[in-house]
Image 1: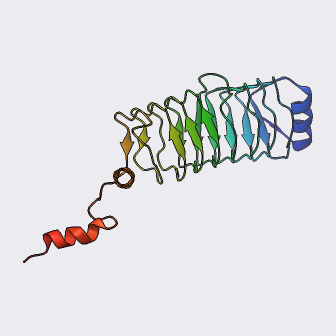
Image 2: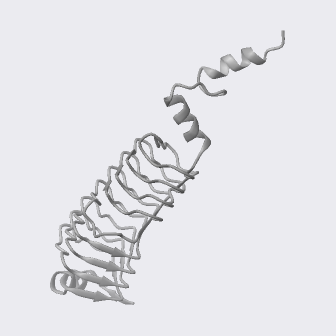
Image 3: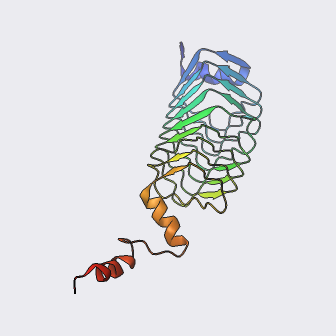
Length: 218
């Protein structure tokens, strides 16, 4: 790949519309308008992209590694086999990205993000911070949330069939508000759901004392 220095990368991003097999390594391009540009087989490494506009931009077989995209605007952006690794994506609204995005997230900060009516089938959110984010009306079938922090995340009217939440923490996935057939959840999540439904679970909360009394020899 072509390694480009910071001054050249800034010039090219502003002046050119198509990039193939280019590595953007380091640098600060906050607020740059990347609307309509196309990136094929490119890498963004340690790049600060806060507040950038990606309207109708296309990223195919691209990787973002340790980049900061906080407050980036992704309206109409199209992602085909795009990977985000160790990136900051706080507060981003993914609602209006191109249809059927092919994205994966690993070790990313997705706190306060919004996903509304997105097709997220089989998308990975592995080891990500997704707390206080919104998933509303999404296709989450077979999505992988392994190791994700979902504390305070809101799930409403999603299809989470066969999704993997087995090692996620902080999950509250209400089966009355989401389709959850064959979804995998942890024991802790199952207990949280049971307690929220008014049940008392042995070994958790007040149920511990009552269970001890019930099993105490007379």
